[in-house]
Length: 408
Image (cartoon, rainbow, N blue to C red):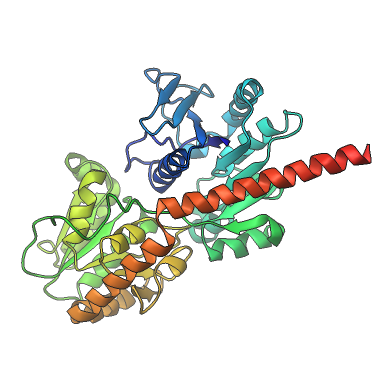
């Protein structure tokens, strides 16, 4: 199958941890690789954001990354990319006319706009599968006036959701959001994100650590990730240390506004010696860091899916997670971790004390988490389920073509 993936701001080549680089980059790179391993031809179209980038890059997996000339060849925040999506879509259309794909898979709502614009220029149209990764309705609900999405996002997102042949929701909570947007249930399939179990696993060395209990947070250093809530909770968890991995490079923490805010909070709570901000940690070093932790905490205000809990589960470490979004699916309360209400440090503190005081239960939860990952969240499993959706979308498109020819 020839698969065109569209990921306008999240290149699979991007370094993880930048302002606009994170889970979507990992998802696109891993899914494309897993599909290529299943002998599909995959091209990922992403925006050219530097003059030094080659037009096309072929990865060892066989995946091709093509840099689309849409907008200036410089870094542009994703919330400012909308004016360039028509140009992006037109470029896609010209490329797809020369080498027609069997299916187009849009990642993020603006990629969906470009994918639909391009797919509809072909005759017959190429089926479009859409993964949103994050919905504007959810972002606006939780961020309010601080939401930096471009005007019109909600209407355009609704257009993409209703125009795509199939929408892939990454969790059950997203299904409900899509239905409220007017998407027919029959056109929504749930296919979660995955985790690289060759990189994240319980075997291997762990990062050095002191004798005291270790709590770990991994994520971008932005307010909605709720890192301040975990720091506040640590004041009620005596003796334990908190390690925060993510954000800017370590040498930039002193000038980063969020890092300074978090350090100030820790100082005010008397936790300077127990809260440590590492800054960005290379992805290759994350498994060792996770294996050194007793508990991984992931307590954002909201989370469309959340890959960090899967990485912790794959390493055999229990997770304390906000009862929101995709975390309701991956972290099963009392099975492989504990749920807590978002933005409630007291609940995080209670959950931490419960797990840190019961090592046998932590081990049991860690083992259950590994089993869940191996059953449901390997990239091989995710690719197989995505492949089935592609095949179904192609078959539906073929049926529509036959029906239209009969009608003529």
